[in-house]
Length: 66
Image (cartoon, rainbow, N blue to C red; front, side):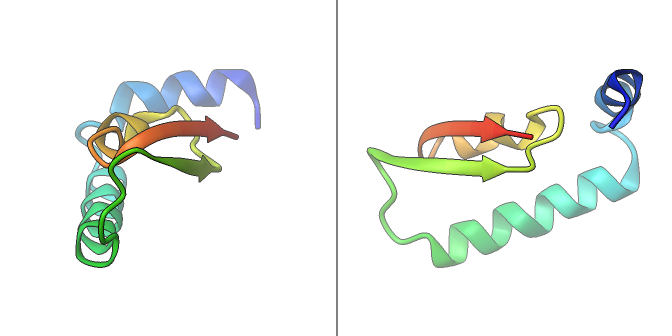
């Protein structure tokens, strides 16, 4: 991906319906199916700008790679 694209994504992902909706769906599924993740390591492969990493931090130690 072009480096400038990450900047564009970062600037709109708090308000653009696609990113907001996808994040809500993913985090809801994780909350339902996660069990006890406290103290576990969580990998977000394909994390993009890392926005979801902020929310995943409540479940354990988060590592992101894109």
